[in-house]
Amino acid sequence: MKKTTALLAIVLVACMLLTACAQPAAAPAPAPAQAAPVAAAPAAALPGEGEVYCVIGSLFQLEFFDALKAGVSDAAKEIGATWYYSGPQEFVPDQISQAIDQAVANKVTGIILHGQAAETGAAIDNAIAAGIPLICVNTDIPSNRLSFLGCNPYNAGYDMGEHMAGLLQGQSGTVLISSAFSLGQPSALDNARGSQDALAELAPGLKVIEVDDAADANVAATNIGAALQANPDVIGIIGQQAYTAVGATTAVREAGLTGKVQIIGRDRDAATLELIENGELAASYAQNSYVEGYIALKWLNEYVDGKLKVIGDYLGGGVNPLPPVVDSGSIVITQASAAQFKEKYTYEVTATN
Image (cartoon, rainbow, N blue to C red; front, side, top):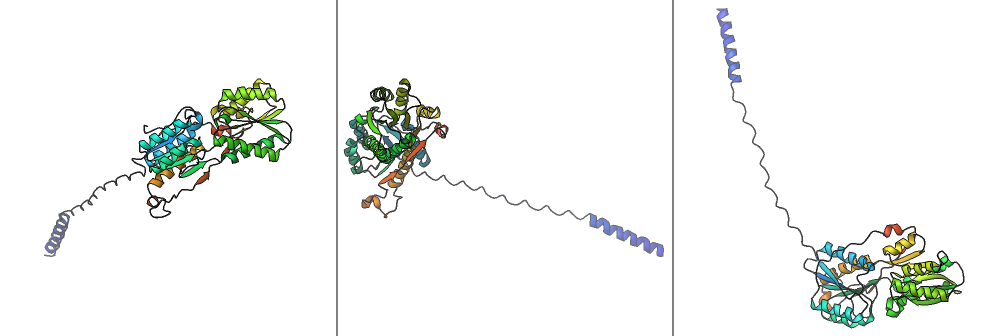
């Protein structure tokens, strides 16, 4: 009887174990719900979309103006605006004025004028009266322009004269100041006056002679060469146009005076940089044209978009919120720094006249 009871207990335990093993497996946890994709926010419109700006001046085919064009081009790209440049390939004030009038007729958003001739003042005033904002760069023109951004020509000339006085260290003799005197550009005349004042103050024993180079390297070489023959005591030359240094070093080389005449040039074209590197040119004073073009376009955009909140409605209230004059200064390039300035400026014109 005891055996039967024990056997029955074993059978009951086995059945309980089999029943436990036969329980259905737990259902798998449901997968987490997938979040719906978030639509990308539309790209914000650039502040200058639909705006067209014009850069006006003469002689824009010269390498000197690539810096100005590059500054305008980069600023226009950043704000989504388009731009073009216009003006004669020769220095003809009437044709510069005509280019301003044409830009007004084209209803451009704003104008950047490379100031070169006082005769363009009336065209500037007409543009302002027509509601086209205009900023002058390089040289200020007496007019109703909104602002002037550029190197103060007198200050730059004074710095060049001071530099020459330091190079000559009390020597006596003649210094030639070569510039485009025949063109009558206000900036050229002020530049020369600055150098003359510095030399008179810091090296009063020097004689100063003006040489007209018509902003042309070949003319500079010819006229400076003639001045060297007529004045055998020349010990320094200050060239105040973009290609004067090339003409000056050519004339000095042909006269057999290399190393005996100190030469200071202007701007940063490839030929001038090479002359600095090989020691024929002591230094060059480069205008900061890239920054002038870049800032001028940004300011025009902010002005027409009403962002310069001097008062709530300065456009309707007739208030000019821009600074009237900004001196962009000069960059002095010497043999130690010339290699840094060799990179070419690039730009992309994105509108048509």
